[in-house]
Figure 1 (spheres, rainbow, N blue to C red):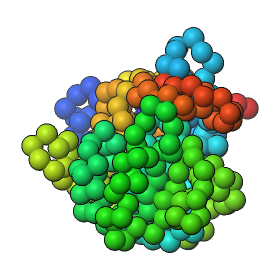
Figure 2: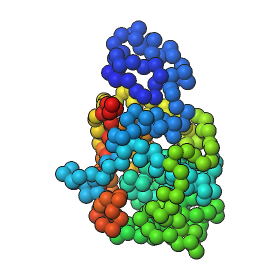
Figure 3: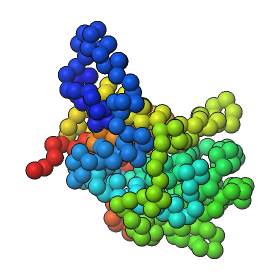
Figure 4: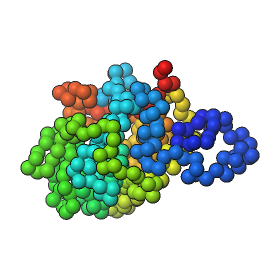
Length: 320
């Protein structure tokens, strides 16, 4: 433990070298030392370290030599907040579930953490069968779906169209890389996201640690996947613990290689850990699944390439 973590009010930069050091560390209760009650608050702490530094770097062709599309921390928090406000406007409250079926894209991070800021986020493995996806979405009592649009190389959109009628509590769908369809309750993420405030949660929600942040389903290798509830305390604790142990520091970038529907992608160490990296003002870099037809640059929707790498960059020292 040779570095401080932004979530801990008390930890210093010196490593734990002796049993006495360890005893002093363990004597301080968790609630007195951890600075965030929710994933939203944890991300805001990370973003405050150096708001202009890169948070996400997207390599659309999975080519390390390409120039990445970069999202700064101030842009990242803005998009998370706008996503939460969009979902709130579509009727999502603290006990409502936003389910998402998306590959690893910058928008996937905005959607996941925006959902947790206003309600409950439920990322789902889009490679499962339509029947399995339907059971998960029903078990979660899904109110809002956020899905990848009809792009070449992906069957996510087709699967969703087959199961939507089986979701009795579904109120609307939000499509990423696709057109709105008001008659069928489909809202375009790209078209709508800029209409919402980026500096505050319109809901005015104050999240407590015991509230549900999200669901993470099991793998489904022995039957229908089961949903596991994560409280905000669960996820913040994981980010705090991994932030203490992982070899991350100013200016470093770690590989991000797991999907966000996997607990290893959203939370745990290794080639995953979205929340672990972002709460600390830095993070990880990794390879996403490849889907033909996705924009090469987030700001250039007319150009189509494959999804590739997402990097979550750790900022260097704040500029003076």
